[in-house]
Image (cartoon, rainbow, N blue to C red; front, side):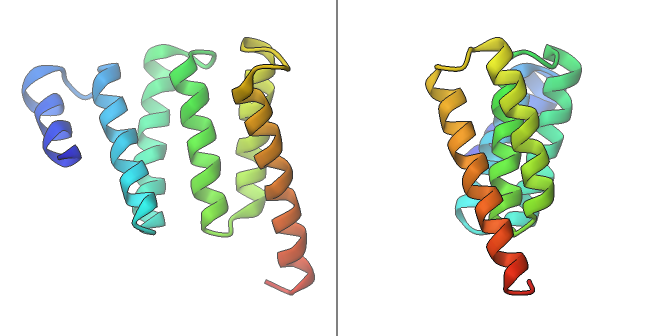
Length: 127
């Protein structure tokens, strides 16, 4: 369903750069991530994030969410250093745009800490 929606939005209705098309790309990435198809999920999420940044700007809520989702996908692959960078970026923007006490900011802060801990544990095990 996500693929069909994406194809329709890209080719007939909205075009490649429309925010709804970018949402479809991001939604497809989430499905792929849930199927443990992490590389495909990462590719699509990067595409959506690039579009969000270009079309909506760095501080738009969809862009913030896209950065956060990419961080999660990178962590799922064990790419802790890159995931940590994305979490830091998302967290800095969320604190600025949403504030320190917003639930999304708190969630990002908590998951960033978990990512750092997982990265440290992986380093200790030699992974």
